[in-house]
Length: 558
Image (cartoon, rainbow, N blue to C red):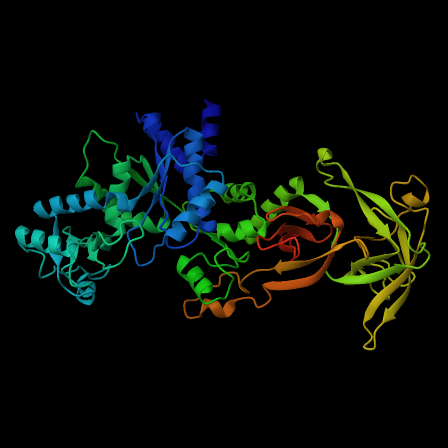
């Protein structure tokens, strides 16, 4: 019995609800879930909580999960968004039972609305939206009835039919449910069910001139598809009463009655989650499209080098709660570091090259040094890297007067070149402005890593990565940082969130030097550049111009 209690406590509250339903007589083969995105933008990390929850429940209970597009607003929805949502979900590894659209049910929803008019449960209102808003009342004052609330059934049917036929302009008439204008829940004060819209729909074309509102469509679509548990974010909690009222108008006790339950949204600091605001960033060219690696979209994260496993791990760690939460982006970065640490090859790349000449190394000589591809994976094996007299190191790895506690190369100071030799700084060559343009050093020829000599075991302060100056490729590296300078860029409604964009969120480095093993790198491949971070080959890369996007640094340090 104790084990049963322990297991119950380890379930999230949504799973507890399902377990209680199953214990109360609900059949496991009646379980069915859905993920219902509106195709008016790309999926982002906030949506990941919803689709991981729904598809995760499907996997846990071996239950079907529908992908249903809430396509009831043709002014904002496009096929491009439908296609991208499907691609993102498939990339995440999720399979849906049926691909559905709210537009599949337009005729059924219309027919049910007609029945509600006949039962006196709905009416056509011909007021302006401003007048309707005034009559709604406030949370502390009751609303007042529309002057059209008591229209005869026949007149309502005629007007609604002519709305459907496109006889009226947008805003002339709406269909409202007749509930209670004094209800304590303002959503129950005769909510709008249909509005006139003369817009081309991406699936139904110009077949319809009236489009159902979300609250009318949502629950009825769940009912049509026989969804058992309709899981929504917390802002829809107040809508649950209306959801149930609409279901009451069509519910047949022989059918499954969907149950709406709510969970908290996921918010990530240093970004925005509003699709409207993300759309602004795209349309005003403040980012390079929906899949810009600085965007919180699934497409942007994929292009930046994130993996489905890391995203699912992040969602799992964030948890399912009843209160909205602001998650530190450091948790997401930690998840991708953990995943890439296990899977990526270690490569050497120098992003800010400084030439280093080993003066006592034989002119024209080259040799091979051995390097592990991934110390976390023995099966990854080794590769050989060309070592030569002239190499590149990072500019920041040289400090002319370098204290012992600083692990850099300095004049008179020794460091080890990774997988290579111990070198000692001898001279800094400077340009007319005093900038160091070349470093000359000597090496200990008996200190080669792995050679087994006493000198090779000698300890020095600092190990530097490097690339042969005559055996390398030149590539572009895009270094990404936070898109915004503040943790909650949309928290202050009086401040335009676009003014808070981090001007240093992207640095483009065009003269990076990399070892030859990277010359055949393909788009989407991921690597660890040693001592720097994790990087992904950008989709715009070519054999002539390789482009790498920084996924994340090796350690949190922004």
